[in-house]
Image (cartoon, rainbow, N blue to C red; front, side):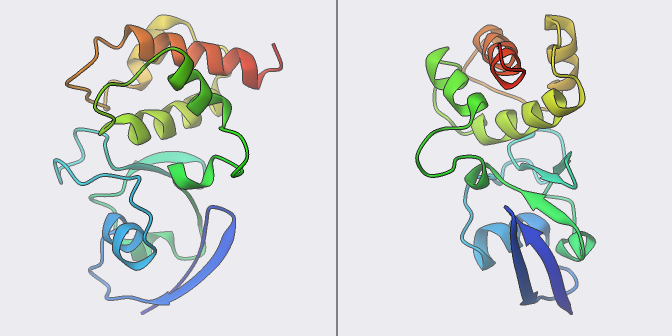
Length: 155
């Protein structure tokens, strides 16, 4: 089938097999490696991307489902000169260790901050419960998300 979508603000048109997963399309067809393959069951969050602004697990979503829709990946956040406020906050707060889960955490956090720009700790924990990190205790992740929220609000 012919897939017409927008990825990171750019029009994209590719022939794909109907059974192609969004994760495979992004990684193999477009070379966007930020979303990671891990559980293949929609439970770890490492493959999180945004579709029409909503956080989704790309490991279980068919690429065909994004036809006519907008997809955002971690690669699309930075303008190439400076980091997105969420990326910068993760660096400044040292909110990652091995980095495997980081893109998923950042993309899920972005969806949350667009919806709720001033979340308290409980809200961040609740929103990110689908993103598993085996290295951190989440404290720095929560601090980074709240800091980015302040920055994105202009404070």
